[in-house]
Length: 370
Image (cartoon, rainbow, N blue to C red; front, top):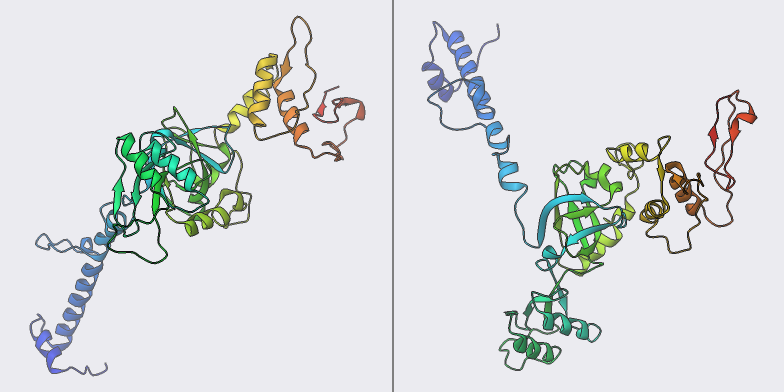
């Protein structure tokens, strides 16, 4: 056995340990040191009722730990939180903002010759009428809250772009800033917890929806947020600078997120309970009257600004009816670019050609059993 080299301090520590000889005392001291190190990292590794201090693991873990309690999920200004609801009428890169949120979320917009008329009207509208403003930041940094007095707001609006002569401090190059309400087209950051990857926070264009109380989200974004509509809540943050708005528009926008970074698979798509609606829609024997047929087609093509091509009804008598498959066929037919051939199907399976029936429009092929 190798000889143990000990210092004077080591001998004082080991002398306090029990043991018949030096080697036993050394081993006991080593095990005691190991236990103390283990307790430092995890206080539950050694059951000691008299121990009050917590280990590093206990400080970090669980909801009451250092990370989740003090460094994550803190409340911030210029943010909103509400239940999410589906809305197929808004664009994929949009989010529906309730009017009650739109009156609280504000953006600091400097007053220039280009936007002075718009900001004057926002000041006149005040904090209770959308689109309005909540307060005005003067040249010297003072903030003037807009009250319910319409005469005072009118006087303030008339003084926009006029140098404030009574300011004791004038900062070169800084003018008045109107903190206006959020409006259509502003970029907001939408987040759903747990934020597991980069795509759990993406930028959307705000679309103010009067009369609503929930955040409205398009079905296609559910995969990236891992969201469904059974009571999920999401956070909405409004960036407070033009560089932040520019980064949201050019980098973090939904339109720039195509693939999952993990494996390169497509990001957007319908993956959860939305598929059930598609199955129910295209079941055999599912028919719709003209108004329902046109309403469903329009809801899917609300962003389409050309004349829609519609299909003839599948049943003429006793009343005109369209099948659910025709609704899907109509959508696909209108999405085909002009000059391109319609969708077609070619297969190498041993199926007789007489068993295939093609729609007159050149699509919606189906196989009829012999």
